[in-house]
Image (cartoon, rainbow, N blue to C red):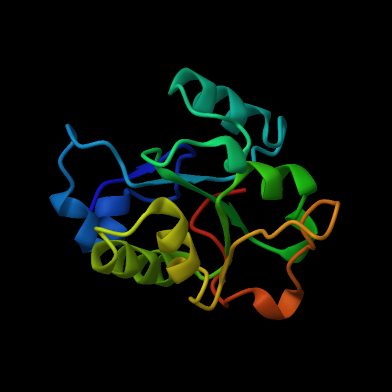
Length: 154
């Protein structure tokens, strides 16, 4: 399953999650995983997406674009910018959460991007931002977070 990390995790993904070992480098990733940078916040993510020819705003992405997931460690890290930029937020959960995400991605290989995100949102610790009426998405609650943090050094 092709998964690309736009932020460097605390260990090689293929060691932490054996399902990622079979990913071919010539395949376009189905999932891009990022972590807000402690200095630049989401600016680095938006710049990286631009170099890939992808829209920074989730609702403006093309149907064939990879799903962009932003991994948060705690509710206080939530920002409206993260919600607008991400197709979904990974809320804690560690490598176990990513393993569940990869399983759903494999099962939904023929689904549209939108339907796949809806399936992923059913996993505890995965939150798909839904804009509130006329405003930004409502922030996730502490109860939405899965135990285990995020696999990134801070």
